[in-house]
Structure formats: structure tokens, C-alpha cells
Figure 1: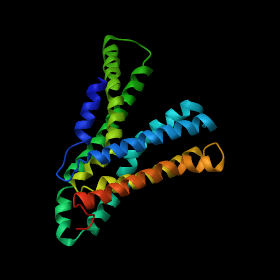
Figure 2: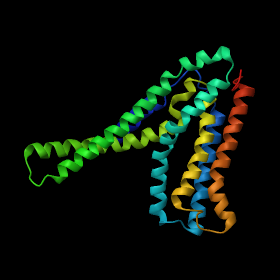
Figure 3: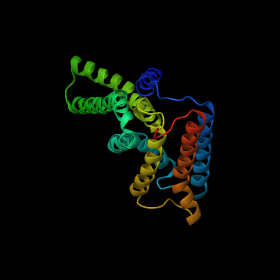
Figure 4: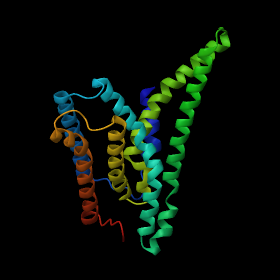
Length: 238
């Protein structure tokens, strides 16, 4: 069921498009940055601790996975519209005509959230029943099986939607990198706000924990945009 959920999520939110550029070096650098960031975060948390302990770290990670696509849905359209507005007048109609894939991905994600909410609401109603029947048992079993598939599907969908920025590469190859930069800084601000301040540790470690991720992701994204321009001839403004 988990493999099925992952494959379905990838099929929806990782659709190849005409604007996507597959650069193995960029992928390797992104993976290396992610591994280095994970190791650095582990060492900081191991050394100075974290609010709520390791369970708090896990919960924070799950919250960020769900929060990332929601932030993209809220602020992404402004970036995309600004991106199209910044393009030359001769290119704007073409870019607007490519919005179908991102809009479809957003609709899918909203539908997934609604589906999970309906199943959870149905489960709550069934659990409140103080009498048991065969029908109630079958309904409860069906809802349980639905949740066992929908919850991993939601997590995988959130991860792929954030990773590929709702297939915005179909509009322009540079859009995912630009949206990633905006998203990572939004997540940093939300994380500080939700945690009520800086993480534990001396000031240097605190600033490393807060700014390390956004700064490193921004640096890799800017390098990726430069590589698109120099190696593949892709420019934000043609």
C-alpha cells in the first residue's frame, strides 16, 4: 500500500514537462546539500537538544512536510504571476498557456486534503456509535483501509509537490528553483514563529540552526539558475 501511494503521488506531482531540465550534477549537489544539512541538524540537536526532544523533531518534520505545499499554494501564484509579468510581452501568452499542469496538481492536492478530512470525519462518526452492527463493522474496516493508504499518499504527495513545486517546470524551467528559495525562507519564518523563538544552544549554534538550511538551499538554487543559463541557455527573462 505504501509503494502504491508513493507511485501514485509521484505520477501526479512529478510529471515530466517540456521545460524540465535533467542535470545529473545539479541532482547530486542537491542530494549532497540535503545529506549535509541532515547531518548538521542531527549534530546540533544531539549537542544542544531540542524543544520536545526527538519526538518534537519528528513532529516538526511532519508539520513542515504538510506546511510546504500549503505555503506554495498560498504564495506560489504570486511568484508565478510575477514571473509571467516579468517575461517579455511576446512570451507571456505562451507561459500562461502552460499553467494547466500546475493548476491540475494544485487541484489534486486540495482534493487529497479534502479526502483525508472526509475519511477522518467519517471515522470519528463511526467510533462514536455505541452499538455494533455488521454494516458499522464493514464501514469501519473500509475507513481504516482508506486511511492506511491515504495518509502515506498525503505525505508522499506533500513531499513531491514541494520538491517539484507543483510541476511549475512545465511553465518555465527556472520556476521550481525560484519557488524553492521563497519556500525555504517562508518555512524558516514559520518554524521560528511556531517554536516561539530560537532553538536551544549558544547564539552561533542558534543562527546556524535557523539560517543554515535557507542559506545553503538559496546558494544551490542560485548556482542551479546560473548553470541553466550558462549550460542550457535558460534565462528568467529571454
